[in-house]
Length: 128
Image (cartoon, rainbow, N blue to C red; front, top):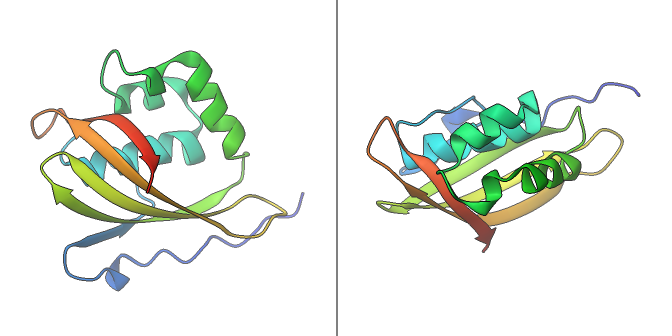
């Protein structure tokens, strides 16, 4: 399958209060946790990394739902997240993605998180 060019994802295009990224993220802030989850699902496709981005006991960290997430983003998918944290635990995100050989798709989600800085994990993600 021919390679596709990555979707444009310029952090400098962020409006005030927004984060634009496809970076690996981490547990420091709610937007970082959302980025960590999507990077683990779309880029690394690593179940352990996905599970680490999700709060313990949450269904989205179950093996079946992790596999379903992988199925939704075929290997080689390129993406960009545009996020805005709306309160201490909520992030509104627009995910633009393009699987190999397919058109660009856009998803708008509301992600919820829990945890202190350095320990932030996802508790859920639903369509906006």
